[in-house]
Image 1 (tube, rainbow, N blue to C red):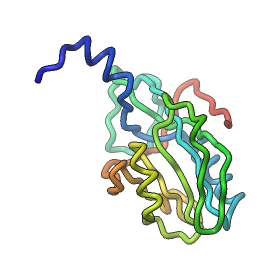
Image 2 (cartoon, helix red, strand yellow):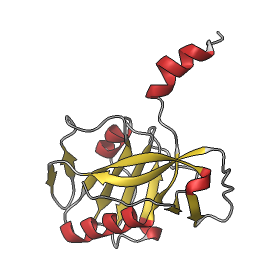
Image 3 (cartoon, rainbow, N blue to C red):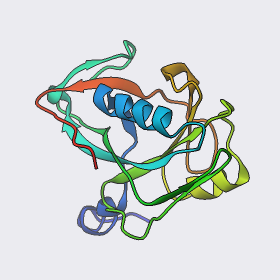
Length: 170
């Protein structure tokens, strides 16, 4: 079945979330600060994204990624915090008031350092295209990224510097 371009533009595209290419250094520092602050309990938040033109991207830590100045890219720029119940082995968050248009995924910590998803994690992952488990000691090398079907993300999320962008804490 061939879909008419106007049908796609008006009915499908608004509900399709792009795959992000990375996140800003500022938001990564915020992840670390919150993870360390709540440790040894788990921490969970939702990832917000913005779309940027390639011409606005100043730097990316992935030298293999070619940035096309005319293409639009999704970049994780902020985190959305909700009321959370947290223990050393689980965290749950209220999702009824999330700004659904800008949420692209989840990030939560595993204080044990193990970044494999539990069955509960996998259930949560089904709702979002990108899901990050951040293992203790909460560094770049202790992150695992999963897709909605709980498989390891085969791409790479780079640290990105975007021209004229500032992050605000939610």
